[in-house]
Image (cartoon, rainbow, N blue to C red):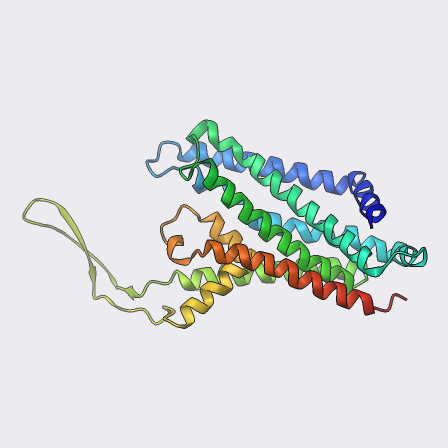
Length: 285
């Protein structure tokens, strides 16, 4: 298995697409974080966390582009059969591919966070402190590896390079859309109104009161609310969306940090185990 891992990393370091995507993600994160921070530097509520965790969904979109092509090449060029012919066990082959997919996801995640450091000269250190920032980075690393585990499984089920690339991109879009829909649905307020009235009280202060408040039919009540929160915090895309809005007060009601960590570890373990089982029985023609 050690030789398989070394061979995978050797091929990875020679892959131009890998370096291109890494540099592009680093530049994208650095530029957008810096630009957003500069434009908001005069605002009272401008804090670093508001701008340096925005790019999780972008990382998730880049992962299928690379992983599908990198692992799909092994099937399309007959490399996978050759590995088995020379005596490598299927479990070792799958685990080595899972390791390389995880490594790619961590490199992309690192590029994202290194690029976001451009916020520091403008807005200063994170309000959560370095330890709080590291916990958020750990959360992002785990959901990136979790999504890489899902893509690794798909790449070993569908062996056609073009088909798996399309399938994984569509899957990623569907997962991101599902996370976004869940997030927006859970943000629906319990009470809505047709407008507001602005009055001046006896002390001369401006008072804003809702006009005709009534229950919101789109509000998700218990117990469905807790169930949807768990799904949102389990999905890699849901975690990425929550992290992108980590500075908003509404997130405190939706975010379940410890559950998210455990969910990502569970996804990694479950999809890796499923991949090992499926790949062991797969017919490689």
